[in-house]
Image 1 (cartoon, one colour):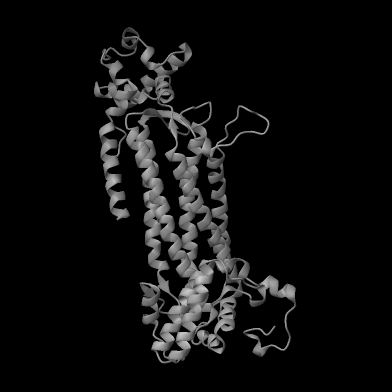
Image 2 (spheres, rainbow, N blue to C red; image 1 turned 180 degrees about the horizontal axis):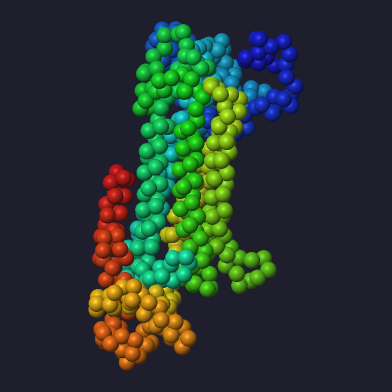
Length: 461
């Protein structure tokens, strides 16, 4: 077999060397983008007078036919032709004859692959944004049902203060909103066209890069040919944002796993997203949540792999950069899968409101209410804090909670305490009163929910 680049070589590599150097097993995922790029490039070559009309029409019709076959899954590739670019050029040449060899005029595989990769990351970023929005919608639907559902809020995984379940769920909505903002902002650096940079130094042909840019739907083009073919910061940024997004999903999964345990029993995850044990018939394992948590490490690994790959490379293109695609391919597939799983889990989540209510009635998460009550009576907060700590210790020693202590007992601690304290110590009242902006009070949560719904409605238009 004669290599498409083999004119300078007098010896053919052995088959195992070809196989080692080939990227076609994975970069065939770029077939759609490569054909799209070639169609735009061929049109530009014709309109700039670089190839004649008959050659252009022949190339265009051949590429459109390859595009149809690619969509139908009918194309077959070979490691003998190394990558998706040479495979498609060979298929085109076999289909239309010598005109197929003209498609590579004024183009290198270096700017070709960079263009394909930009198109791929741009398309996948938009899809991930859409998946994030679906999860956000699910969170808002669940939150809307549980504004007045109260559960213990935690710090250090210790019960801290009672909060609205809707407030807790909305915390993840806003994390996802910032992830979406990062993804959207990254498009400014992904939506740049490298095509026309050649191998590294541009071309002597009178090409029109603006024409190609508009044809491919890019908003900008690289202004430096070395930069265009040699950097992968847009791909690294994609993996970086994906890692932050996965961190947020993993934290949410950790809570779902804890909350679905018998120790918490706050929620039940649908059978659709759980599995049983091969030995223990009573088990219902939150496997999908655990897998999302586990796949977070996989996405982190892709980021580290890619940024390590690039850190020591001189300008311009180096063969090392063939290894840049698999981490990105795996990342976008993993993230989209995890977002779909999370959306399904949230949609089918069953909330145990009674268990949550029981939990906030059997803990000391209302201790801050007592301290605030004393402070409003004129007791310096630090003294109030110390006094409440002593009362809590008393309750622990006597196996009771703050609502179990009688008014007479409270007056022995502080004569300023009156009967209105018991309303203040009510978990519902404790939550309801916290209506500072961004707080867990029911009205504050309603305001937050409306803001989130409005924001999502605007971004989904």
